[in-house]
Image 1 (cartoon, rainbow, N blue to C red):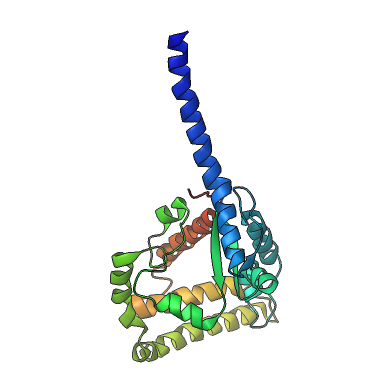
Image 2: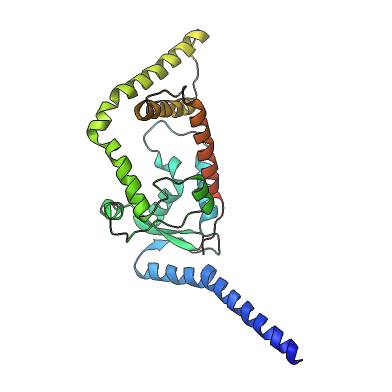
Length: 245
């Protein structure tokens, strides 16, 4: 009997500790954070156990991408309908839930500038699905010294004078695309319908290839196809459920 008690008691203790830790991370801590945000006057959706706002995010973006985009400059409802809906409902400073973590949304330009220009390390990126880190190790996912070093490396490429020098390459890429469209219409000897989305993707890739590598899209076609596949996999990873602890 004493041996039984000796074995069971630690197991019960470990179970209670594990349960308490899980309860703290998936319910108590998020609810306390939600309370603190509301006390500061910041509004947002109520916390849903484990999934947060992931279901609503996937629902809205799937619905937006299922319909053709209108021919105007109002692209936000298509690109990020969830954030737009959150701002319209809860204000320019609001929050949403990425799993068990609250995520602050800022639309105020001055606050956005403060966050993006801050060099003291006070603003860290939110935790990312580990699958995304496997697929992408770019500037958007780096932190600290790695981010700073990579930023310095690419910064000179975006100086105004550098961009001005790229205009002839941009014009050449646009001209080739237009000539291709004209040829398609001539071959059919009538008006024709063109799916511009893949054409614009090709135009962007061609412009990047000419300005950055001195070649064309056709010369690096295989690389761009692999990049496109990588982007698709990354988007799928972004939409998958990841619960940070």
